[in-house]
Length: 420
Image 1: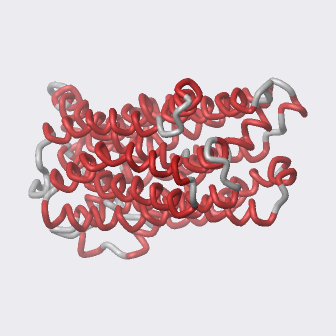
Image 2 (image 1 turned 135 degrees about the vertical axis):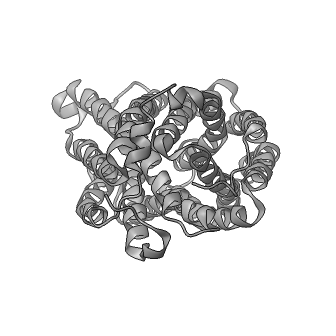
């Protein structure tokens, strides 16, 4: 099999990776942005809080299948190649999203409705768990010398594109539809539009070259397990993912938080998501550019330390002010710090792993970190706000997990000059 070389990389190859990744994250995070409406559709309860808690709990279900997807599809990517693995994840995401878009409400089919939604979330989680490793490995393997950070940062930048698109649609829908229309069918529109774009991403991915080294994968089968040999690195990587994951999903929760806790209008709340997506896109690429020049560790560490120190004061300002400027400012601050640090992290982890297990190791580190904390973040902070009566309590969770991540980042080796 012919492998891609930096000299032969085209913009179409980058577009294929970014488009597929963005679409998969778009489908996954759209659920978070419309959690209030999904909760009322599939999880009717005696109080709005209970309905919301059930909805965000099912959002978390999608995270628990990620480690399985990371292991199975990661191994497949290291054995069969990055391209077939990324095509497989697109197929799985299509199935999960189609189910969410078409499932009738609880009032129509009863308990079957939430059961189907749970199954769809599990399939989506399987897909995303298997997407991160192959696509991250592919981006750094096709990068020209000295530009691994910039190329690899498109992994996180594509997630910013997903949030930007989902938030933009949310603003348009909440502006154009009445609350009744939005609840009845409007929230399904973003899922349907995502489905229409998936064939384009699949077509682009079919044209991608291959970067995996089959000979290295075969050699990796003999001797001690390469995964076991690099278990410490993978464990550290999962802790590195932890802080960025919690910050990211607190940011995604801003729409629900702004509506339910701060009592902003849905259009304003959705606009905060647009701010988050745009900020993530720009600052992820900035983080990739910076880590090519100054190394991975300082670019990972400094923003994460700032997030530890600044998130609580920022939330207190938002709670006291309750203005649009404060909402957008806090959302942008959290997104910017997370994007710069996260972009460097998602480059550092795969480049430290050998090519023969790169997709598997990256998938496991990311999926485990996200499954343990990303999947529970929205449930935890919804519960914290209710239990403490403190609207700024989500910041405690961000600060605590960021502090753990800082220690893991310090222990992680520098990989900028490593040959991949």
